Amino acid sequence: MFAAIRKYVGQLLEVPEAVSPARYRSLRRLMTVLMVTVSVAPLLIMSGFSHVQYTKTLEREMESPLYALARKSQASLELFLGERASTVSLIAHAYSFRDLADEKTLNRIFLALKSEFKGFVDMGLVDVEGRQVDYVGPYKLKGADYAGQPWLREAEIKGRYISNAFLGLRGFPHMVIAVHRLEENGMSWTLRVTIDTSRLEQLVSAVGPEQDTDVFLCDSAGVLQTSSRLYGKALDKLPMKLPPASHETLVRRMVDDKGHKLLVASTMLAGTDLMLLAVKPSLEAFRPWTALRSELLLVLCGGIAVIMLVSHLLMKHLVGRLQASDERRVAVFAQMEHNQKLSSIGRLAAGVAHEVNNPLAVIYEKAGLTLDFLRMSKDCASYEKHRERIISLLEGIEGTVERARGITHRLLGFSRRMEANRQALRLTEVITESSEFLEREAKNRGVQLCLDLPADLPEIISDRGQLQQIFLNILGNALDAVSGVEQGGRIEVSCACSGAGAVTVSVKDNGKGMPPDVLKHIFEPFYSTKKDKGTGLGMFITYGIVRRLGGEIVVESEEGRGSVIRITLPLTPPEGAVEV
Image (tube, rainbow, N blue to C red):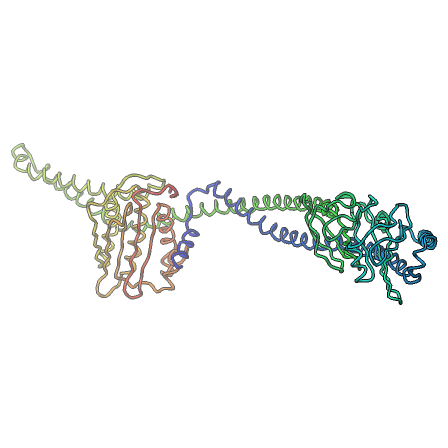
C-alpha cells in the first residue's frame, strides 16, 4: 500500500522537460468520456425507468378497454342465451306433451315465439324414447331419431341444455336449446329449439368492438362458434392455444401459432361450454407508444449529443489551461534546477580556489627558481652543472599545470553541461569526479569519505552532468548530516549490479538521521530542515533527475543512526524515459 502511495507521489513530483501534446489529448479524451458518462448515465437510467413505468401504465390502459369490451360482450351473449332458454323453459312448463304434440298448437306457439324473439330457426318435441314426434320449421325433421344423443341425455339430467355450434342435418352452423319436462303423471319429454349462430355474431358486433379488436366465441376444443376477423369462419379450428377456462374475465399476453403477440381477454359464458375471446394484436395496441417512443428517443439522442459537445468544449478549455499551467511549471522547474546547479558551483568555489591556488603557487615558486638558476649561469659549463636541476623544476611546473588544468576542466564540465548529452560512461568515474570536489571540505570537517567502486561495473547510457549533480547533492547533504558527529563522521559510497540491466549506488552515513515525519516529506519542494541555510530544492530536483533518467531513489533513515540513500539506474534508459 505504501509503495503504491510513494509511486503515486513520485508521479506527481516528476516534471517532464517538455510537455507532450499527446499526453493532453489523451487526458482530454479521458475527462470527456468520464464527464459524458457521469452526465448521461443518470439520464439513461431515468429514461429506462420511465420507459418501464410508462409501458406498464400503457399496458393497463390497453387492458382496461379490452376487459370492458369482453365484459360487455359476455353480458349481451349471456342475456341473449338466457332469455331464449328461459322462454323455451316457460313454454315447456306452460304446455303439456299432449298440447305440444298437436301440430297446429306447436306451430302457433313457434310463430308467436319467432315474432317476439329473433334467432329461432325451428322447434321440435322429443318423446322419452328420443323420437321427434312433432316438428315446426323449414326442414322435414318430424320423426327424426335422437335416441342416445349426448345433448338429449344432458338435458334429461340437468333439465336444460345449450349446445355448441354444429352443422348437423341443416348444413349451417346452429345451436340447440333443449328443456326437459317431467309431468305429474310421470310422463317425460324434451322440447328442442334451434338458434342461428349468426344472431350471436350480430350481438357481438352490436356491442361495438374497436376496429383492431376481434371478438368471437369458441368451445373448449378450440372450434370457432362465430366467425373471427383474424382466424376464420365458424366451425374452423382456432390456430392458438386457449387460455385457461375461467368464469372471471382475465386479460393475458399470448402468442398465436404465427408468432404474433396478442392481448387476449377471455371468459366463459354461464351455463355453456363456450368461451368468449376478445383479441387485440400488441402491435396495434402499442402503436401510439411506438410513435411516442421514437420522438422520445430522438429527444434523448439530441440531449446526449448536446452533452457530448458541451463536455468536449469544456474539457478542451480546461485541459488547455492545464497544459499552459504545466508549461509554466516546467519552465519554473528548469529555472530552479539551474539555480540549484549554480548554488552547488558556488559551494565548491572555495575548495576549487584552494585547489587551483596551490598548484599556481608551486608554479610561481618553481618558475622563479628556474629563472634564478638561469641568471646565475654565466657560461655553458655552469648550465651543464645545473642542467638536471633545471629539467626537474620544469617537469614539476608541467605536472602542476596539468593538475590545475584537470581541476578547471572538471569544474567547467560540471557547470556547462546543461543540455541533454546521453553517452556511454562508467559510473565509477562520475562518482570519483564528484567526490573530488568535496574532498577538501570533508577533510576540513574531519569527515572520512570512503569509496568502494568495483572496476568491473558495466557501462551505462546516461548524462554525465546530471549524474554529477545528483551525487554532489547527495554527498553534500551527507556531509552536512555527519558534521559534528562525536565519534567522527563517515560517508561510504558503494556500487553494485542489482539484477539484470541495472546498477545500484548506495550512499551511507553515520549522521544524525531523520525521524519518520521528516522522511516522508524529503522529496517535497521547498521542504528543508536546515532553517535559513537551505532552499529545500536539492532532494526534490535530485528525485526528478533520477526519475527522468529512468531510475529509482529510496531513502532509509533512523534518527540517531544515520541514513542510507540508494539510487538504482538502468544500464539503458527505457523507451518511456523523459529526455533531460
